[in-house]
Amino acid sequence: MQDQTHQEHGKKVAAMFGRIAGWYDFLNHALSAGQDIYWRYRLVKLVRPAKNGLVLDLAAGTLDVSVELKKQYPDIKILAMDFAFPMLACGKSKKLDGKHEHTRGTSIAAVQADGKKLPLPDSCLDGATIAFGIRNILPREEAYKEILRTLKPGARFCILEFGSGRKRIWKGFYNFYLNRILPLLGKVVSGDSGAYTYLADTIRSFPDERTLGTELRNSGFGRVMFIPLLSGIVYIHVAEKPAE
Image (cartoon, rainbow, N blue to C red):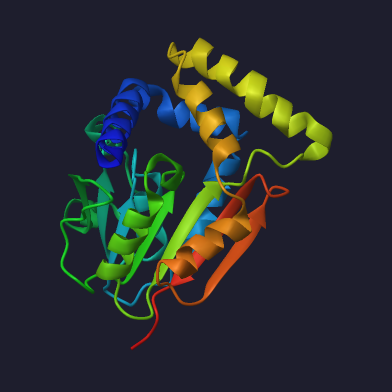
């Protein structure tokens, strides 16, 4: 029964992101005052894949992280996977700069896939990322298990995600923004009344940084560290697969 509930949740989330795909990038940049670009840069900096390696960008959305991966590590190949195909379709139109453009077609492969059932063999990845996507996967532990299975020993899983919205930040201004302003702006711009209310709800219910770190260790990852950004509104977690 719970599995069915999780499957229904996944379908609803995929449909929701499909509806707002055309507005997704604009709203990300506008609602974060452009900070999301820097956050993704910091996320990718921590992946540190092997030269000529293969990196998974899970919940890749409109491919912002995939493109940043290619900029920072020009020799790697990237699998961009997302449950919502319209998001990937929007991302395919993005351009790399002139230095990397000629390799785009063969180095970034966009594939619709379920993060809880990755169509990949064991120990094939030199790194993996997920940006603002782990909140949308239930149960998270199944995604952790799949990432752990497909990473090579010693490779990193890097997560960019909001901190728990239950913490009072900036004397409560951030909490007011999250609960009242963000859903309203999202509705006005995208026309979707539920998408950004869902965003605020999932941020409030998301575990804090230490609890998320414990989830990762309990799932089998070795060293886990986290880095706060913007007063802890956002965190980057880095979890390594134990070396053999």
